[in-house]
Length: 300
Image 1: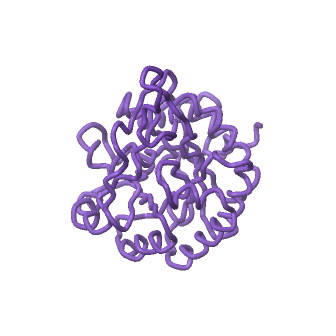
Image 2: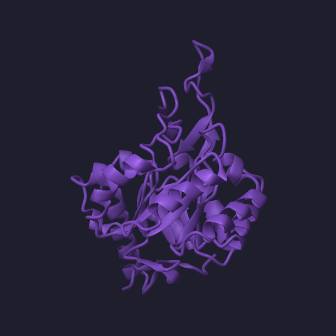
């Protein structure tokens, strides 16, 4: 049985990775799970300059998921090089650096400063964060900007480029095609869905920034549908994420057309969840006579 997944020029040992923003830079989970068993670590978003993030509270639990407004808090690329890279150099798993910014130059700066790092196997370009005022989602909703940004970054690196799509658009397949046209090796879908929780006593949003990003089980049907739509619109691999809490959830994404998956919010419930999901996928393949991940495709 073969669980490997090819994304661009890299081969992941299995299709299950950790979603950006829920796993730090890997070190935070190093004592809890065997990181070498992960298909990939998709790191916390990195920007050129350090960002403190949005005002607290930035996380609110809802009956069906988490509302977050982290605001891309991160140490910035210089501290990343001195504080995070030494640990990443010790890992024996695929590391995908999530990159974000407010301008095209921001993305280019991060790629320039990290392009020679052997511990970085590829990049996930975050054009879909709903929690920053400029950049992020502003890029992700405009197909022209998506293709332009992707093409610009494509010229800078031979490493795989994965463009992370937002569901907060009229037709996600249009954005996916723009990423493919710009030279992306894969797309990941979806990022969080815009949501809001209101304190009825204070009559204002619980999150100071107002609207935030919803993740968790509530968004899984949205993510599966987006994966189904996008996988039929582009020829490059699709990485599915959103609300995966067990192996069956991940299998839904694979059957919908995903080549790989990411586990995010579920990590806050069970840090070992990605390993359990990978084991569950392997069991499903064994029970159903599947030999490789591609065998999930073609049923729908």
